[in-house]
Length: 306
Image (cartoon, rainbow, N blue to C red; front, side, top):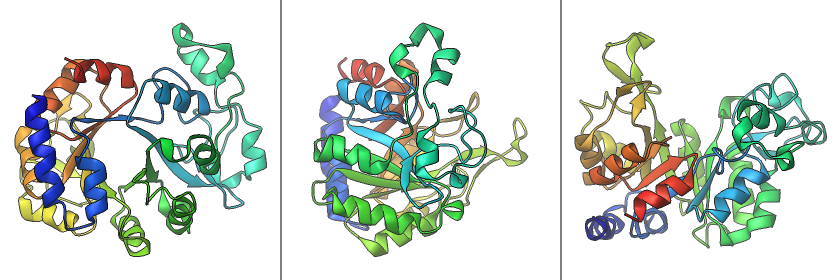
């Protein structure tokens, strides 16, 4: 299996020329499926906090995945939701908080309450980190996989993010991937720095969210998974080096090996989110995906070691 993956990644590094050769190298030359720590090792520690990122580093994840948003005073922070209610003791939109106000929130205790069997006192009082804090701590020793989050609610986010990753030499070090569901944001990033590897996120769900209904892609980036063609993916290849997709919508499988093969033939890497089942990880590896987002990087490491 690993020999097959090595052969595939070698072919992919030659074919991913539509966007940037540097990006293709970053995503294709690893030799086995990439282990992408979703919001850090968020199965073990509070998502998108330093404890979660530290744990992901300890578990040798290939990438630290995080979401970039802007505070009210324009600071880049790692946070997933548009509101702070779910993962802090605050309430309301994140964009209403200055960084100083955001730093006063407890972003860790909720995890201990929700997962008492994984609780640690060290998680209490964990703060929302800035991207600058992450880059200062880990530098180019780590690779980052950053989502441009809710660009409509974060004007100027793409430019600020590109400027910051350039400031820390992450592009030259092949230590950065930027992802988004919004094509305009990725195309803007590509215009600002065509050397940054970009991944187009897609999400398949039933039309009208009714069980059994035909599938559609959320942002209409591609047709339904059973109708997508190499030419559809070629359009994505003009600005991105890969796609990030869901494997299931609830319990319904939405992609298969043929879908992965179609994307690969278009020269795109295929990264699948968010997979915590070791059986599903193995199935995706057998299909030939090039990366897996997981809350438990240790599980994916165990599957890769088989």
